[in-house]
Amino acid sequence: MGICLRYLHERPLSQEAVNDSFLKVFDQLPRELHQIKAFRPWLRKLVIHTAIDYFRKEKKHFFLTDAAAEEAVHQDTFFDRESVEEIMRLLNNLPPLWKVVFNLYEVEGYSHDEIALMMKIPASSSRTYLTRAKQQLRILITAQNRTMQ
Image 1 (cartoon, rainbow, N blue to C red):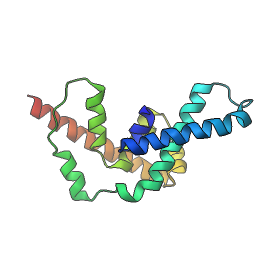
Image 2 (tube, rainbow, N blue to C red):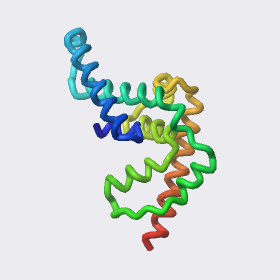
Image 3 (spheres, helix red, strand yellow):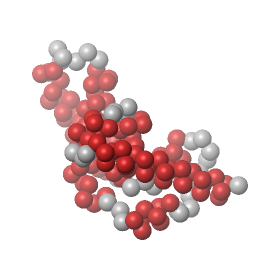
Image 4 (cartoon, rainbow, N blue to C red):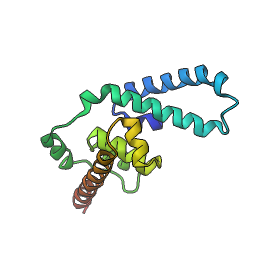
């Protein structure tokens, strides 16, 4: 569920992706059992790909205008320092496509070429989205630090 929540904003959609992932596990496991070297990494990859599929299906609803992205930067939110919830909230302030690329590259360790294949975007767009996500996170962290002082 944690993996799906990193890629999908809405909890019900994340739950749907988790359920779909387990259906895929039960469907694919008997066929691929001899190919699976380690179950946990295989399951993780399957869940990530399922969440990405859901993201792509819902992508038309996720795009923000520049004004909405700017508003997200100036959102006032208070967090406990050094908490995982704080980081997730900061990431949730990013436009969804930037967040997905950030998670795939920084958290999951995929290359830009792999992200491009998964998301069906050019690798250069993946690099651009990652750069913009990092810039936006810096702004959000700076704004948060000012409000906490």
